[in-house]
Length: 463
Ligand SMILES: *Cc1c(COP(=O)(O)O)cnc(C)c1O
Image (cartoon, rainbow, N blue to C red; front, side, top):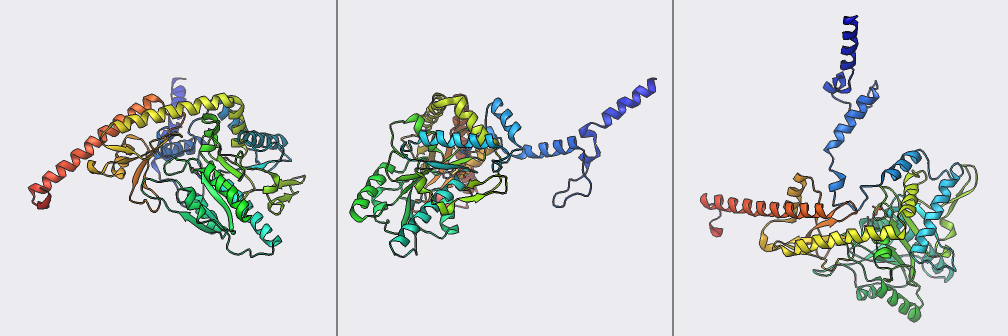
């Protein structure tokens, strides 16, 4: 009896995941292994391996959501196996997508006497490509009708745009007329737009929350310019607003600020659901002001899923879970909930900004913080680079990226901090204290290095 029991115990111990033989053998990396493994073992192996990744909660580099409510996660788990494109099989998922598009069209003040259209995308990148493609098509059609050349379309944008705009231009063969930045001016100006637009301009881009500094392009002024140009020359040039981050912030924090379809030339807007829409990656949205802004040629009708469906996306299959999760957030939070979250994030961003500017080491690039995004430089006199501080912070787990601004401001190097809802006041205090501690360390290291150089008489001129 006794020995039998002992045997059973031993077997149990031997069969625990970490006691398995797989933990002392290399895992196949580049070839599919001939034999499979125990499910618990594979789970544990991959789970442990991923611990090398940064901690999403400390990732201040990304605009993308790193926290959702457990109930949202439950819905996500329940819908992971549904393909969004299978609208015939999953009609209610399709209905939910339509509801979200309608909610966003209202949020962005789409004219109620017109029929706005939109689509869920993988993110803002796909949404921007689709929006710009629609403008390219509309422009070409208009030119054909006028019997004019359809060669050489262009877009006019600031150098403050996200790389996806450049991708669009290259992939879809459109000339980019980039407005360079200068020291102290990190958004486009209306004068710069004016000298670059012409009859071949398919659209002007305006960014609401630039990737580099979180600032806003002067979209109201650009709109006024385009209204004037239309009267003067007859060119009807649309604006595409890149609201990847700002699209879910501005309507709640500054309801009176006009950046959306209230401006006559704004014909399309993209927003990342997975940024301040507060959904996990990958969901974005494209909303067109009016059905006529989306050329019929670009819509594909497919019937191989059962009934005829219209699609306007680059990708066919995609998960539906994040679309469902977006709907969850919109219902769960309502306008009030979104406003409160954005207010909290902005308060914490401004608090962090004020603590940063009180130090003698850093300078804020955007002093007037409208969105919860900070960009700061290390003062020249301090004597170390943003890259060194970024590395030090990384050792503690904070992920704060360092980079140079676009042309012609590439000599300005910044750290960017994106404040999200799960970044508390307490974390702001911890971050600033770490920044100060590492700053002192870096200054100390520099001093010691100088002293030892002097001792060894390497750099006589600085001793
Ligand atoms: C993040 C971002 C994008 C790209 O959006 P994804 O959702 O990551 O594809 C485009 N433009 C701006 C301004 C952004 O901040």
